[in-house]
Image 1 (tube, helix red, strand yellow):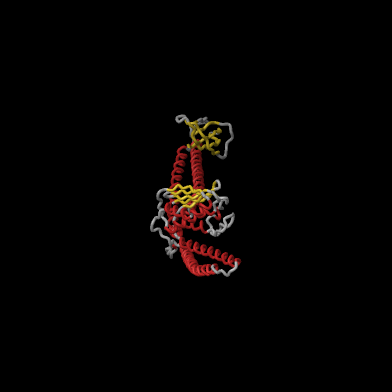
Image 2 (cartoon, rainbow, N blue to C red):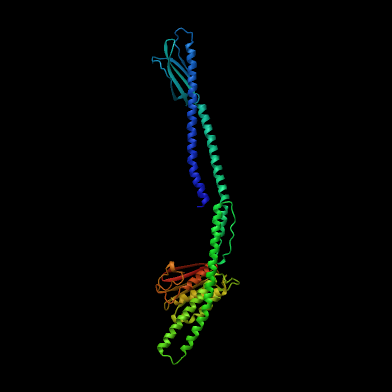
Length: 420
């Protein structure tokens, strides 16, 4: 969830209860005030009627007046010093409904007789007024809430713009293309501090990466010469007939290790060049031709193991890859399929214009996902005599040239699939 959305939701969760409580409070306050005003009107009407009845010039009359809003009738109840106020519902014949009234009752004495005085005030109009006011206030509250939310969202979006611009710059960075980044100066102190820290961090990373890259390349190049000299010297020693068999075996073992070290050095240099994008795609070599070429090159190994090759190859399959990397891709995958296969095993090759799949049988178990494409990790579980750089190089190609590389193991078959 975006920070702006999260902030807005939190703000909404806080404001909704506040606005709801405010609406209930105002409704209760209006209701109380209207009842209070109505009660005052009833008391005032009572006083007016009592003054009128006290001045009546009728000799011992027995009053009995009855209307929805005024009722005066004789009673035997004692005189009350204080009136009683309450809310009642009275039937309205024309509308056939009950309407709310405020009612004042008090037993008074008129011309030496006790009467119960009942005064009522209709609350229909006042309730309508309250409802109208509440509706208006709810609309006003709703509009105010929307306005506050929209204003908060627009202001927050404007305030956070520099942050998102800096984030976009960081997300677009590539280690092998890292250049000096200039972050804009903003009016917000915290964003300026963040941009300063990011600028210093990227500069430091760029420096470290450049130093490591130069060290790797220089070391790889410098190692090639002494390795070649050491190999040539050992080859000369192997041609010396005066050496004993033990000495020759020791020299041969050292020669084999030097060759392995030379291959390792070459592969590490190759990985560094792929990471540095030193193999631009200037043409699209035909992968079908490359596959057929390496099937011929590995023909002796295939015959030695009596492997069965199953091919499903299209006529042409131009792939956006450097020719040198195309050779390395096919030789690594096909070489592994032959190397780790068992005698009379199967190798299936399927090639289309956008997919390249190689499957091979093997007695070896499934390669664990956590070490599948890691360097120097293939010496366990039977994957001996390997530094683990073959699949790491293929994976680096896929990442650098935006291919999709997948591996799966089913029914004793290891399958690698590359999709454009």
